[in-house]
Amino acid sequence: MITIALAKGRLADQTLDLLEQLGIDCREIRGESRKLIFTTNDGAIRFILVKPSDVPAYVEYGTADIGIAGKDTLLEEGRSLYEMLDLRFGCCRLVVAGYAGRKINGITNSLTRVATKYPNIARNFYAGRGESVEIIKLNGSVELGPLTGLSDVIVDIVESGRTLEENGLVVLEEICPVSARLVVNQVSLKTKHDEIRKIIEGLRELTEGKADDSRN
View 1 (cartoon, one colour):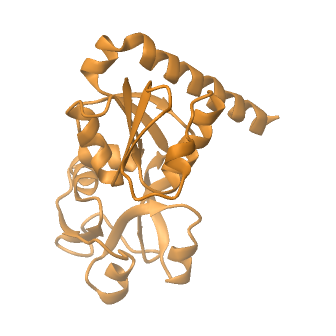
View 2 (cartoon, one colour; view 1 turned 135 degrees about the vertical axis):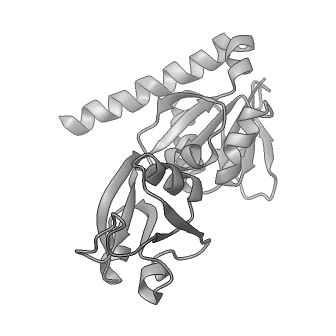
């Protein structure tokens, strides 16, 4: 049996769309239920529904063989996993944002304050440039940081940029692109190699085919 950890919400729905195209029965997990664990009728695959930020932990510790999570979650958690495939949905950007024209290189303030849901990503980003910053961990609307004076800038994911625009903020720097990624437990890739590879290659064909169609 292969166990797949899915992040609750849109990422899970889009993943199931692809898995169904591979002939995997996802009817039970699609139904109205409060269950968190589902098994296909043939017993070949078990799904566990978890909080998005928990997917890497379930995979690293081997509770799940495969996980689907956003690149932002993987970077923030920093778990020991094999990232095997970019599924090319859930696309957005991880950025530094704030007021237009604001210097963020430590000249205007002795220590730049950064509000974010991603403290590890923010800390690593600035440390990689040799900059010291004060990280303020927020769980809600991080855009409020600059608006209220709590922070100078924010580090967050941006899709359309509409929320930033409506609050008078702009993207100052892009850290990296973000999309859904398939990750695998390091031991499982060896012990269940054939079964896992079959799923990966099937999803690869689907995602690359969609990418080719979008370019035509």
